[in-house]
Length: 127
Ligand code: HEC
Image (cartoon, rainbow, N blue to C red; front, side):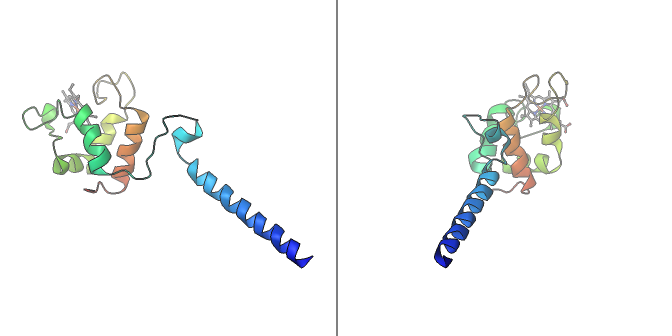
């Protein structure tokens, strides 16, 4: 009798533990809405994610030669400075139709915004 009680306890612990892990997995907004292209923000880095997001969506207008609004977003130093000042997040999270939205007229995907936010919350590291 004692042995089977122990087995129940063990299973209980296993089930509770797996429920706990499942909950963590579903913290992610896109996962919980069943997005097949789930947005993975668990390991965002400057070199793998941020550099590309800014390069593809912002650098065309914000680079060494063309500094729209006086802003250069080429390279880590410039990007991190603007990120930490709050400038980037302020502009990319504006609503559609807001003339201050960046990139102008075409918001970044929710996933790219999440990645930027994650990286900035980590202190905008050069990783
Ligand atoms: C098509 C050109 C274009 C693209 C692409 C673009 N911007 Fe801009 N951006 C501008 C212009 C023009 C201004 C100046 C007018 C204004 O402040 O809205 C500006 C201003 C800004 C400012 C304010 C600068 C300041 O100090 O006042 C920020 C921050 C900014 N952009 C961030 C971004 C980010 C981040 C992206 C990419 C996600 C981006 N921009 C993409 C043209 C662009």
